[in-house]
Length: 208
Ligand code: AMP
Image (cartoon, rainbow, N blue to C red; front, side, top):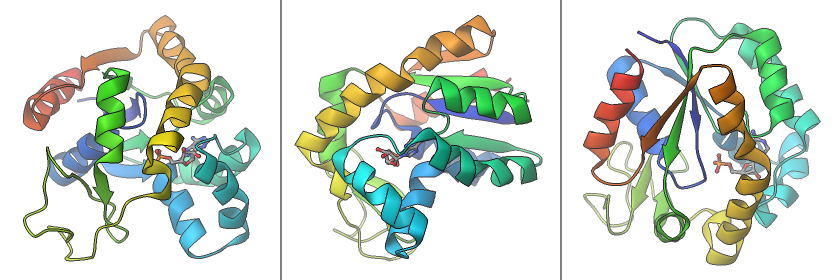
């Protein structure tokens, strides 16, 4: 099985949901730059202060900040792991390639209007980072995380205006990574629309 994977795709494509399933069922260690940055913002660290202004605008945090944050983490990675939300630019992908030869980049393909609907209806757990959707993946008890019982919240960057900016930023900066990994024979594209379990089956097949 492929054990060193990247989850690619626009915000709202289901990376977080599939990462959660791969972690729960196949013991993938998940490294999410978005979760790491949000924790830094919550703890009001120097990194958090620097990152917040970009995140609130739906812009990318500068490459040197992200690469600095990830460098040691990547070196420490062993066994089965997935990267969620990193790399997001060619510069980040080059920095990653210097440290690790990944097995596959899984690209979850979803159209823009579906992404806007998913993100504006998304609710997240601040504690365990589980994600829910007000229509498609409703928590058992309204406003409460099924897994850890914490109060769910709407991310500051999941409002429609910021979401549209994040999608524009994705097309400009991250979309070229699809070609980057295709050229290197590492790309697996999966349609990210439909039943979560069906998409998970397709993702699992791409790991064989
Ligand atoms: P995410 O949770 O992956 O949607 O990330 C939320 C926000 O964190 C993004 O909109 C960016 O502002 C920032 N971010 C996360 N990962 C990266 C990255 N690899 N490069 C630059 N900014 C990032």
